[in-house]
Length: 389
Image 1: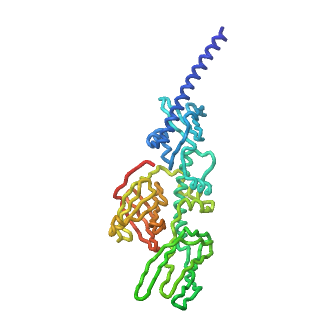
Image 2: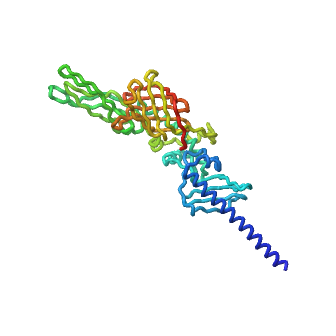
Image 3: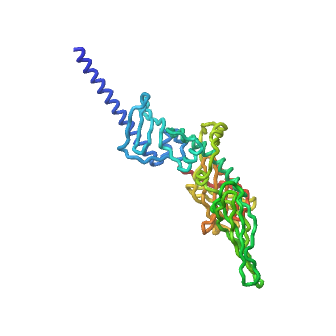
């Protein structure tokens, strides 16, 4: 009799525990579905209320099938592992009051592939990292890459030396066309692509008392490391063309990530100097921005950046809004404020570059014109609207 009672009691207990477990599993699965919807709708405040570590992410994304959500017990009491069909996993805790919090995730935080590959080249990543750990590493990598990028850009200034013209066909008669070439020398060990710089040419025409002078910007040609290239030109008694400036274009960060070859100790040295935890993250708005100030302390301009920080424009006050110049955002770091803009003409050619630091109040830095002239600038933010990324 006792054995039978014990057996019945055991079954009742087992059923009770199983029923309780089923209810908890269902509750966790319902929460996972709701949390995933917050992510898909980019409801940042709701996400942060359950998962504060999401503040470290550059971007979060999740595409899933609700029927694919599975739940199993975690290693600690009241914790559960949640997995989705796309490989994303979460570790959650069911609190005594019935609320659920997200302890950690894997696969929720997203980064451009170029940044991930760059971080791997630096030796900063390892397998099976949680999203929070990945995010903190990527913040450090991002800050480090800004330092390395600025060093790289600085090293490219003056990398090409113009060795001057060489005449190959002399002009002896008025109807003849002379020919020659300019030799451009790469003074660095790294190759320079033709898209990394532009050449500015001056054209002069004089005949029968008439004169015409104008300039034109042309793309460069590839130059091997420590090598040279010849840029041809033509001339006559009445007209000529001269190479008057070489302007290095600011490389995109994607291009930098792809081509930079680390020494091997950059990341470890950065962590030693700054620590592994980047601390609380303060982010800048992704626009739109309206700014006003002066180039070189005397040329008043108004500069606008569109919502999303992809494009913009600016105009000189003296010429008005009908003479607007287009801008594209080549790099923007919402943590450090590093902002690089390229000015382009109606042919899509780069005719100027703004490199500086944006804060909630100002944008300061240097602008390089198509002629290679550099102007310091300080622009004040006169309007800013916030948006969720």
